Image (cartoon, rainbow, N blue to C red; front, side):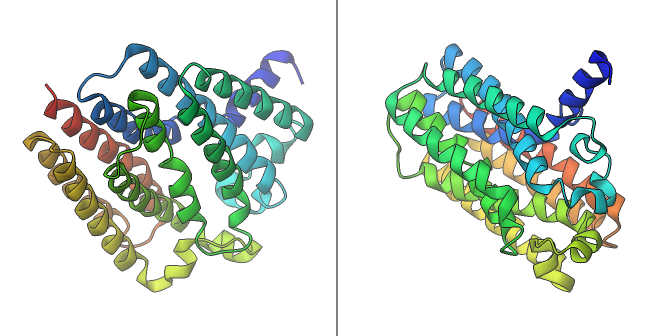
Length: 285
C-alpha cells in the first residue's frame, strides 16, 4: 500500500472522517469547564481539553476496532473498517493507540495531580468498553461512564476539587449517552444478534423506544436538578427545552426502527449537546 493510502487508512481508523464521536464527547466537557469556571474557562485548559478530547476519542476508536476486528466483517456498517480490510495491521493500530494515549497523557500533565489521577480512571473506562459487549447487555452504560468522565476531570482541572453537584451533570450525561448509543446499536441489532454481540438495543427489544423515552426524560430531570444546584440562569433551562424538542424528534425518527433513520437520530444528538452547552454558556454572559 502506498504511503498516502496508508496515511488515509490510519486517519480512517481514528475516525477523522466521522467527527460525531468527538463532538458528543466535547459538548458536555466544555459545559463542565464553563460551570467550573463560572464563565469562560482558562484558555490553557480549554486547549488541553479540546485536544485531549480529540486524542482520547481517536484512541478509543482504535481500541474498539482492535477488540472487534474478528466480528466487524460480519456487520454491514463496519465491514469496511481498516483492520477488517487489512489496510492497517494490528501492530500499526496498537502503535498508533499508544502514541495517541501518550500525547493525551502529556497534556494532562499540564493540569494538576487530581486531574492526572482521574485520567487513569478515564483510560480504564475507555479501554474496558469495547470488551463489555461480549459479557453484558449494558455496554452502553460503560460507554456512558467513560464519555462522562471529562466532567469531573474538568472540575478537577479548573477548581482543583470535585463539588458534589458535578455528579448530577455526570449522571445526566451518562443517561444521555445510553440514549444515543442505544439508537446507534439499533442500527446493528440484526447483525449483532447473528454474531453474538450484546447491547441495550437487544436487551430492550420491542420496548426500545419506551426505554429510550424513559432515559431521555430522566436525563432532562437530572440536568434540571444540576442547573438548580449550580444556580444556572434561565438560558440553561431554555436549552433543556430545546433538547426535549430534539428528543421528541428522535423518537419520531426511530418509530419504524429503520437502520438509516436510527443512525440519523444518533447523529442528530450532536444538536442536543450543542443546545445544552449554549444554554450553559449563555447563562454566564
